Length: 503
Image (cartoon, rainbow, N blue to C red; front, top):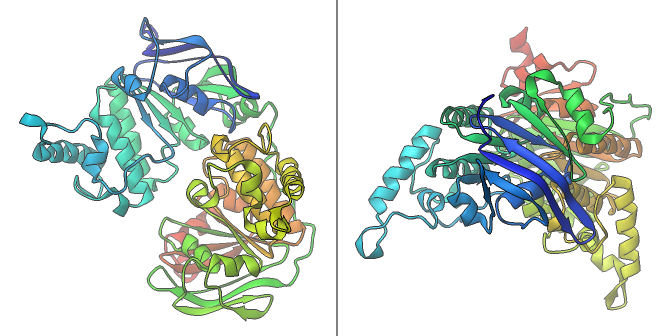
């Protein structure tokens, strides 16, 4: 790699949007066979830089080179024709079409007279799927696949072209551990073929496992490039946020209040069964388990999105029936969903309107909405959560993932809920924003909120929780206090091993 030339090079890229200089003279390159991490906080400019590379945005200054040749990317199809392939974090699939049609969309093999060669299409698709070791075939309808398997379809697209550079944007956000192994094998194969890999992720363990170099952006500016083997998490974090990150958790100094939420023998078909737990005011209860353990389904039941088949839900000691999200909101239960874009936000709406949407009827002055009251609410939580946006008029769809998540959290905090359920609070969010949200969750508990946190990240659930509920295959295996929990006994519990079996 030392004597090789970059397969891709960007020099002094500048991009400005109204009120925001998103990229300020950024340079970046990737070598053949290299896995090069691009890191930075949400809003640092990573996505904008990749959209410039992909022809979605035209730069206001700077140059792009493929090898020694200067190129201009006028659109995504042109970028693809030059060998630039994107694996997006946000899925861009046609759910009503088959896997094969999605993978070769716009490039379907043809027979004479322009007819689609369905046999050839199936053969080509199944050959790619075999490499990925996935449990579906060419004719599976994409809408019938799990989010994780849909992500594998996105990855399969990268294997259909003669790629020179492949950009992976948070590729493991929806993958299980087994699927991650397959993904990393695919990346290794691409490296062996001399393909340059740009890897965007907030997961430090992945960065240090598979990358060769790390480049960092902060506030649209290039901060430097380091060899992965010559640095550590602390140094990279400091490059990203401009300060040393305090990861210590302050001990709880407040006393727990009364039981805000109690669940007794709750079941929902085959999804989960005989689940019982309680959450007190001033407490953060973490729910941890593997994919399919039933954690999200419990949250959806509490928020009125699923009907339980058995059991009771009690709020402040009173049994309640929650048949819709409107019921849940009226009773003081709020849910920050796992899928913030699909379920938590209206992307075409501005920041203020997203923030105040659930309480719009309470903000009316006669037949009209009191705009001043809406702006007051937005300004309060914009400051409290450090939401980075030029103003309330900015469309939520234009914000970074971390700032979108803060809008969702602010929306529900403005309702002053009795119980706040947060599903995967920091998925796709940078380390600086993660720390802020963890601190916020602890502060909410200290203010008397009852908080449920569902997370697939062990460090996160250990860091924010007062107690941890470990689930396996729809059942609660054990509930740990912070004093008794360890990584070992937590892993044993989510693997289906009971405490009695460990002894």
